Image (cartoon, rainbow, N blue to C red):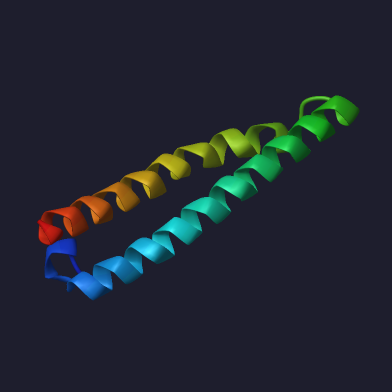
Length: 80
């Protein structure tokens, strides 16, 4: 069970921010690879499940981005 952002120390928040940045970057890369592979497979074989997979995972990018944005906002509010 993770803590609320307001309950974390500044060091914990910065550590979480770093982890979230790495995860977001990796996930964007993976979704991009899935999109390229899906496009290629669609070109070769026509419409299939790999065409839809990147579209299904893309909303998670926004979830990860919003979580990172909240963490950065909490860090910014404490630095002031």
